[in-house]
Amino acid sequence: MAIATSGYGGTGTGGAAGSGSGPEAGHEPGRRGRGRGLLAPVSARTWGGLLYLLVGLPTAALMCVFTVVFLALGLGLSVIFVGLPVLAATLAGVRGLGHVERARARALLGARVVDPTPPRPKREGLMSWVGAQLGSGMHWRHVLYMELNLVWTPIALALSLALTAAGWGLLLYPAYRWVFPRWLEQPGMQLWGDDATGRAVYVEQPWEVAGVAVLGLLLVYAAAGVVRGTTAVSRLMVEGMLAPSSLSERVRTLESTRGAAVDTAASDLRRIERDLHDGAQARLVALAMGLGLAKERLEEEPEMAAEMVEEAHGEVKLALQELRDLARGIHPAVLTDRGLDAALSSVASRCTVPVRMEVRLPPAVGEGADRPDASVESIAYFVVSELLTNASKHSGARSVGVEVWEQGRRGRRGRGRGRRLMLRVRDDGAGGAVVRPGGGLAGLADRVRAVDGVFEVDSPVGGPTVVSVELPWSR
Image 1 (cartoon, rainbow, N blue to C red):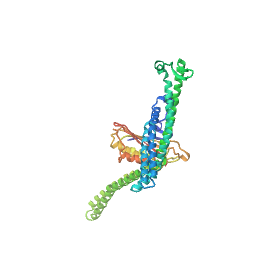
Image 2: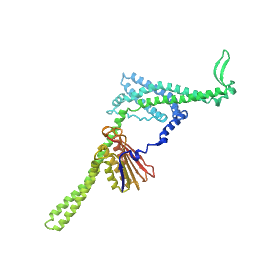
Image 3: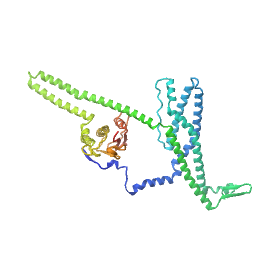
Image 4: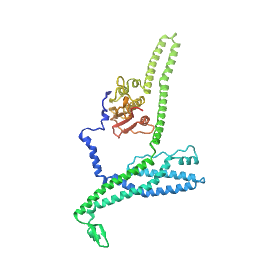
């Protein structure tokens, strides 16, 4: 059973989930921002950044020494054969040091940086490996980072540590002021002193103590800003020099999705071949044999021949139905003729579990028709179809909800690079669904990622299972 609603003119239920209205929704981010600003001196981000700089100074020194010493050794020995392998091994070691730096940045600075793929030798053998190491631009970027990091980290640490120590020292002065008269035999913190004349200026009056505390508070906030600013520069250095470039990352993503798309296409072809061989082809072979026997008995036993022709007629109907189902599995005609809304409604009507479907898309036919690319529509159709099949066969769900909507604005001629086709399928089954390599969900994820889409599964044990899919409107 399917309960379907469709329309156009908004983002739909799913699209509105992340939006808010009213004065409270509008001012909530500002309140959170002010709260984070007030807590900046004691936040984990500030102290994590200071710890990053403290640990980074000896780390930077050791890494730079390793890099310089072994690079100089490799370059010095390059006049003989052994120098090039030493130089290549040094670059590989520097790349290993880059793993440490990226791990530190992820743990203490919250940097989102991925590890670059290692260079691939074109052939087997030592010299091919050496050539791959020496020709890797990423390795030389690591070398440059090690040198610049040793210059930048002491400067950043000195500024951050000096301001932090001075700020907290002045802010907490009222708490430890008693130490000066009791243990140092002076009335308070000495601001200025002249040994020749014996004159000195101390912070001892209450208003002076309060003024020092206020100055310390200002320095504490300034120190937090300096720590965050200097660590932001460090994070940019890590992300810019130790991470793969956007182009190389894009190439790697395309290579992986291309391989997944090829595997999916091959799997689909094998499934079609198996269905044809075991289904329609077997029925047609049986049909040919039955008609041959009926032909032989047509004159001698016409009644039996008529029965055999009747059975063959039934086999023809079954073969035609199997061929229709197979064609629908390749690409349903209703999707081409009437669009995604009608195609998904047709799938929902055949599902054994009650389906509530809400589709909010532009009209697919007629005046003002505006549809996603055919490949995107096809992926969306098969994703929803497969998820409904999983929900009815494996999850034990009593009901399924499907939401489809458009997100983003149309540009000229109805197109816009920011437009997205959004899907959400939710069932109240047992949950526990996991994307495993080689599994059905992994195949769906590969289909989605092949067009730069996003595939997410949220399925705690006990349910519910929510699968969210984001696809580009046009490629």
